[in-house]
Image 1 (cartoon, helix red, strand yellow):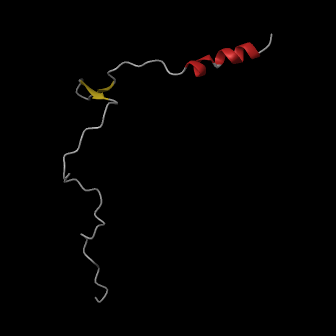
Image 2 (cartoon, rainbow, N blue to C red):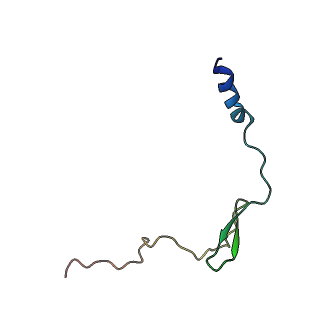
Length: 70
């Protein structure tokens, strides 16, 4: 018996592609106290407010300069 038909059969999932997923997806995490929490996955990113006060880098010049004369 030839392995060619078996190899072609193994490639069928690749040709079909991913199956449709449910609209609502969430990760369910168990908590130490016995409860659970659902974390939504996917969807759009939340919009940041105008003039966002968050800054990620402090290298913009707010650090003290080291005085080499000491």
